[in-house]
Structure formats: C-alpha cells, structure tokens
View 1 (cartoon, helix red, strand yellow):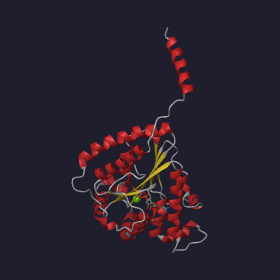
View 2: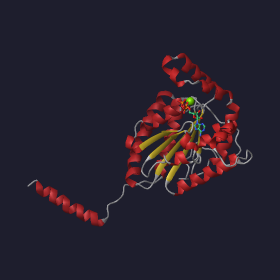
View 3: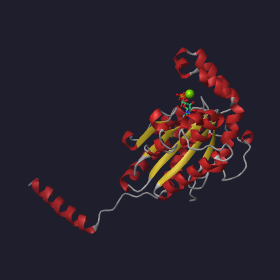
View 4: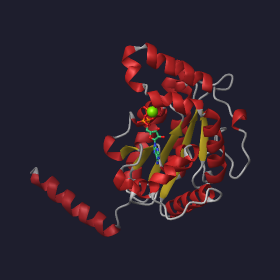
Length: 291
Ligand code: ATP
Ligand code: MG
C-alpha cells in the first residue's frame, strides 16, 4: 500500500488546484443516507479493533487533522468516527483563537503539546493550519503575534515550509498523519446557518462572526487552495471530502482512517521464549492450586 490511503478525494502534492472543480456532494450511486450509516458502523468497529492493536504494538500514533468552513460538520464527523473507539485510545483537541500564553510561543507550540502518544489516535479540531487560513485572510492578526519580522511576500511560504518539516519529522518518528478538509458548498452553508437560526436547539451554534467569515468565502477558498497543494504530501496527505451530505462524508473519513490503520501492518507484540517458559511455570502453578 502507498503511504497515503487511496481515495478519489486525495489531493495530489503541488498540483495547482481549482477548488471550484472539487465536488461538494457525493457522486451518483454512492452510499448515502441509511446505507452509509450502516456501513459506517462496521468501519468504525474495525477502527476500534485496529486501535487496540495500535495500542498494544506501541510504535505508531495516528494524528487526524480537521479543517473546514463553519457548519461543514467537523464536530459531528469527529463524533461519528470516535463513537465506537475506546475513549482511552482516542483524544480530541479543539484549537480556537490563541490565548495570551500561546501567543508568547511560536505557532506550532500549542499543537505540539497535544500530539498523540504512541498507541493513540489524536484528533485536532482545527490546528496549526489556522495560521495559513484565518490568519492569511485576516493578516492583521499577525500584529498580535509579536513576531520579530513579518514580510508579507514570504511569510505564508515560510509557514508552509515549517509545517511540511514538522509533519515529515513526525511521520519519520511514527506518527501517521491524515488531514481532512470538509468541503461544504456556499449554498449548503447557507441552509445550515438558516437551520441554526430557525431551530431553537441549534441557536447556540450560530455566532455573529460566522456571517462575516462567510462574506470572505473567496479569500478562504484561495487560502485553502494554496494550503492543500503546498502541504499535501504522501506522508501527510490532505483529503478534500465532499461535505454537503453528512452520512456520505463521515463514511469517507472513517474509511480513509481504517485503511491507514490497516496499512500500518500492526501486530500484537509476541512474548519472547524466556517469557513463554515462565508463563508455562505460572500456568502449572495456577492449575495446581485447584487440587
Ligand atoms: P463551530 O464549528 O461549532 O462553530 P468552531 O471550531 O468554529 O466551532 P468557534 O469558537 O466558533 O469554534 O471558533 C473558533 C475560531 O477560532 C475560528 O473562527 C477559528 O478560525 C479561530 N482560530 C483558531 N485558530 C486560530 C489562530 N491560530 N489564530 C486566529 N484565530 C484562530
Ligand atoms: Mg464557529
């Protein structure tokens, strides 16, 4: 198996991208609705089984990164993928506006502290990629970052380089990285915002700032396009998953995670011969106790 699990939504490295050409809805004939939900259950079950071996094997960790426009369904997708996994084996971290303490450090510091240990699956709900997305769309945020020097012509390429270097390093040291951009359409976002406004139990999900960011949609798409092509690599691939149909999207994400775990060739550790001899003695002793 190649390093990146295959999928129609895998972003090829360094290819110029026209995001308007990437699908936001499932292809004809795809599993959606109930059928997708059923299939998701069995994929998640396998992820759980593989995670147990990942833990016992204790050589790899898995990092899942989620980025998306508002209302694309990050939270629900993360919940769906995690739902069947042993909670001890999987941790989610959400990254919002950086705190004062976080701004006292380089932009990779806060996420680095949250990277998964060997044997675990770590999920980033937003990540250091915000530094080339929201910050790129709002370059005035850079003023709050106390950087010694900012050159608007080079800063984004420098950040891409830092991110690529970090991910290459993590990959060499046992972290399997998979990155998901949940690709929702402008129209579907409109519908979901309306639902958040119209349904009282969804009101809490809506914040006024969401509309301001929606107005900047084309700027975000430019930032996403360059992020995807600059940082999708075989050892840390991006998948642009169509997000207008939630069951379909969740199934795509879970399948890619499952395939990546399969590809790690995980095994339960084998006891060495000395241990086995010891086990034999203990077994005889325990069996003897029954007499
Ligand atoms: P929901 O999808 O449920 O609204 P959320 O992830 O959007 O959840 P919010 O509290 O609404 O959570 O938003 C978090 C905000 O923090 C986002 O607008 C995001 O762009 C912003 N953010 C995250 N990282 C950074 C960063 N490094 N610099 C500036 N803003 C950031
Ligand atoms: Mg939000």
